Image (cartoon, rainbow, N blue to C red; front, top):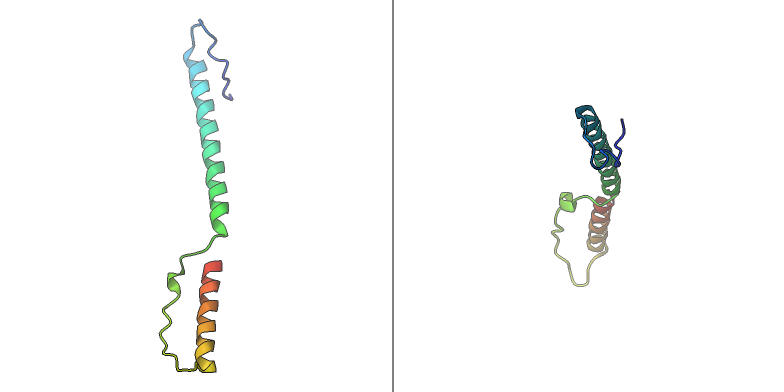
Length: 87
């Protein structure tokens, strides 16, 4: 039986079966809302960035002026970080 907010009626004796049905109906509503909220939260989190701790430090020394290979290392590290953030 679904929850009926009109039960028990004012100034009436309630039966145990009616109260059990009301409580069961409330439990079902709460469980359904909880499941929906969990699914919505999981969906919202699914496409967010991951912890980028897997990207290591960039340990290079730059010459003056920087060489093309050194600049390419910087570009590669930035791309690695961006890829980690997009997961």
